[in-house]
Image 1 (cartoon, rainbow, N blue to C red):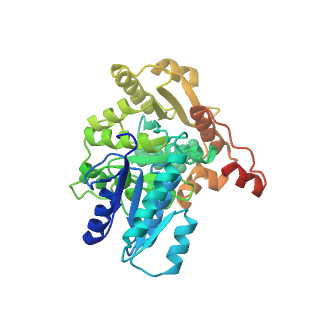
Image 2 (image 1 turned 180 degrees about the vertical axis):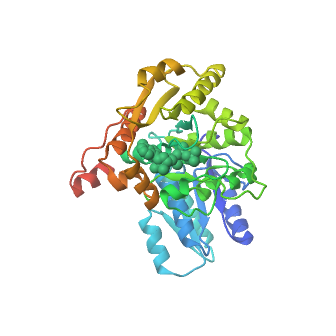
Image 3 (image 1 turned 90 degrees about the horizontal axis):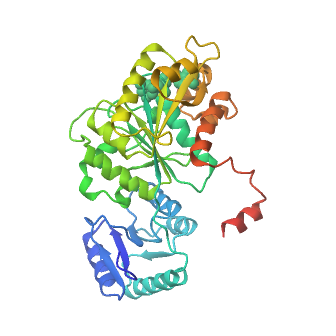
Length: 388
Ligand SMILES: Nc1ncnc2c1ncn2[C@@H]1O[C@H](COP(=O)(O)OP(=O)(O)OP(=O)(O)O)[C@@H](O)[C@H]1O
Ligand SMILES: [Mg+2]
């Protein structure tokens, strides 16, 4: 981005409004409009609220909480005071009623520039997040359980960290079931609209779960037109890294070139397995594949034994020797708690945060992030002062 130029992205319903605002922006010194097809970052988003106000406010919240854009201005043709009130609550600095008053918009742009100049020293830092790829050695071993709960635990550890969860089980992804969400979009939209893939588009397709994580589910039915390719996966994950501190992936079996590209792009691959002969046999193959991909460092590949039993027929030592990998974490066997969480569509944190299985996954989150559970929150006033 050229220094000092303020880039503005317009998301309007009507083309007349787009034209009016575009002219004002382009004729204001120091401001430039980003085209709808331009996927480069922008400083200011001007969003027109339409019929689906709830969804649009969700986008606003996502942008504000992630800090991917400096400010958002809203405009609406509706004269509904509750919308204005909501905008104020969301921290929106400017709201333009329609028809647009040119003077008002110019003044708002000028105010924005002044605020930006004041904040110049504390420049926004481009985020370079981590991709944590949770990959199974075999189906049914609890990969989704670990991926979903790891994402939730990472978000709980530090509320200031942003966490996304991507379901890469190209079909039959179960993340929405695990979290009891009915998302409107899935990565099929990303694949179809790859030329428009930017922060704005991504935030409009991600589903924000009540735990604070952002979810990108897999398509639930095979109706063509949304095939992912390794390049699309790479673009998507590159963008996610620039927005989220952690992107957790619930991967399918590493059987195709997409899964392999995703492995290559991951900062950490957490291979999940249970201590059974079929799983360990597969794990051996995966271990060889990772070796061939040059992923041999202890930091980038970690083994998680799930459904760990004290009296297992296969010992950890035997398993480690047979697959030539160290076991980094052991998640205890607890069918009742995991199943109860799945059946209720809740995380283990919500269902039984102190159960050994929840604690074990929390430990993985702590070790990967280097963060401990936040201290109990202080008084209301303390929190307010800390925030400002
Ligand atoms: N630590 C655990 N202890 C006991 N049961 C578990 C544990 N983790 C997961 N399970 C159970 O294993 C079953 C499969 O879990 P999950 O769907 O997470 O596995 P998966 O590897 O994602 O399966 P798939 O290959 O179908 O995607 C569920 O019934 C779940 O309750
Ligand atoms: Mg699964």
